[in-house]
Length: 285
Image 1 (cartoon, rainbow, N blue to C red):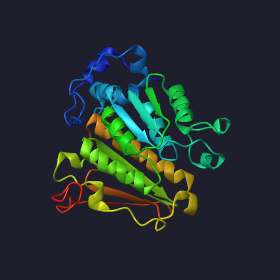
Image 2 (cartoon, rainbow, N blue to C red):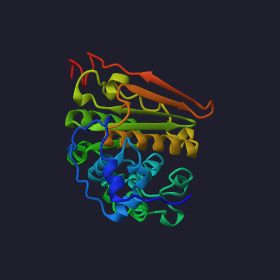
Image 3 (spheres, rainbow, N blue to C red):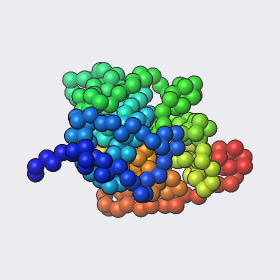
Image 4 (cartoon, helix red, strand yellow):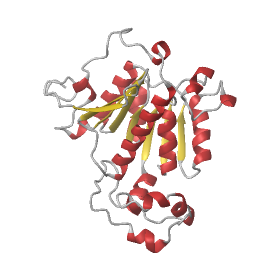
């Protein structure tokens, strides 16, 4: 297929977006001055009426924090960088191991032993030098979360443990940041977006699960296993929801939980309601 590219008259014709929402925390009038390289790199986005020049400019000015540089973080960050997200922050305290490579496709065998954030950053910079990658080689605790989260517009949960998930959910609610959260185990995945800081009707993560499960009740991927491609599908879906939130298009997953069973090739969506008695976002919060 011939590469049609984009001229500036075509770019100008694609600026108007009738159904575009304005993402919380992003300025409504982004800079539309693109270089020729940017026009060529992002031409397939700009040609989309739902994205256009304004949507691509919003991606360029967006700052996204990705927590976890593993199986979910790999496809998630690859597609965010490829899409032209301006700044991607990576936080993870692990180093790369051989067993990670079955699913963590942003890394390579030659980088075993390196910090995952540095390995992933090298991949993203090679994919798109226009995207700034900020690395945070540390464990996410409450103090770090309170320091990092306000620096970014959207937070992505790609972690594999409940304490970190609940810490992220609590902090994003209190600090007023959108959280896009995915999880995988064996042949299943789930995904939702949380914007409870906006108030009703948006639920928070504790409206779904008020407290973490007791230790040992839910096995980790290291204990129960996971099909590598499942993390690819869920991480890609997670990236799609992040891009939608930044650009301001489509229907948000806030208030809905997407479930996928790979063995049955079945997707289900469950409606989530805000709990008036929720300890985080309800009257008891």
